Amino acid sequence: MEDSSTPPKIAIVASETSETAQVALHHFTAQYPTVSPEEADIIVAIGGDGFMLETLHRFIKSGKPIYGINRGTVGFLMNHYAESGLLERVTAAQPVTLYPLRMIAYQGDGTKNEALAINEVSLLRETRQSAKICITVNGRVRLNELASDGVLLSTPAGSTAYNLSAHGPILPLDSNVMALTPISAFRPRRWRGALVSHTSVIQFDMLESAKRPVSAVADFTEVRDVIRVTVQEDRSVTLTLLFDPEMSLNERIMAEQFGG
Image (cartoon, rainbow, N blue to C red; front, side, top):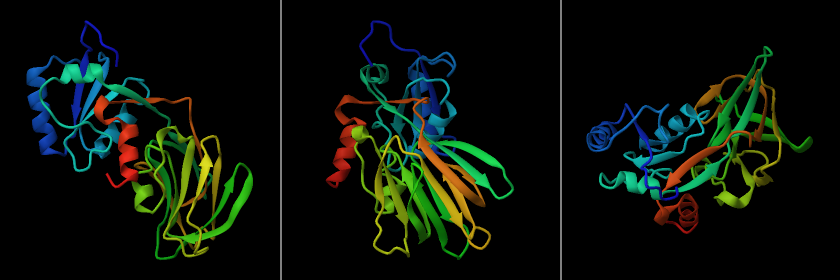
């Protein structure tokens, strides 16, 4: 954010399931003037990465930038905790624009479900049976049958989350690609995933869906017993995160690639 003689109006929200976040909320609201989220210029979110995702989804239509303060475990999407100088930090913070994935999931009864994902869309087997999935990219079948625990499509911002745990690549924010990563692939054994353009439309068709049911998850929105799922980046929706200049999201992602 650019320097301004008038401090920004801030709203502060905190994870209701975290005692440390609630204590921090009490300390901040005792020190700084706050307004409602509807009146705010900037929303300050106190908690962990999960709470940041919840906050981004909650205010996704507002277009308001969100500044996270870590009171969780990892805090990859958050800034470090400090009680002093909050307004100065928020004013000096650097914005990062993220674009979510739009998932359209179809169930066997014809129901169509839509959801947005900031980190990833994942397809997961529901039973002991492995999932069998056909993968199509931009109208061309690229993998006739993937037998696995599932598969996920990750944004660059989400590439250090579930994608990394599934041995997918870490993606720089400006890479303009998405990571398509199998989850415990059984066949083909040697397939480790693919990088696809951010403009790609990915279609997943479930094979033998009655015998091998699959659920589709966009961040924390789950649709069970899907038969087909399409995913693509939605640039009509923008999200803005704010980071302290000394530790931007770009720097964090770079550091992760070197074990930071």
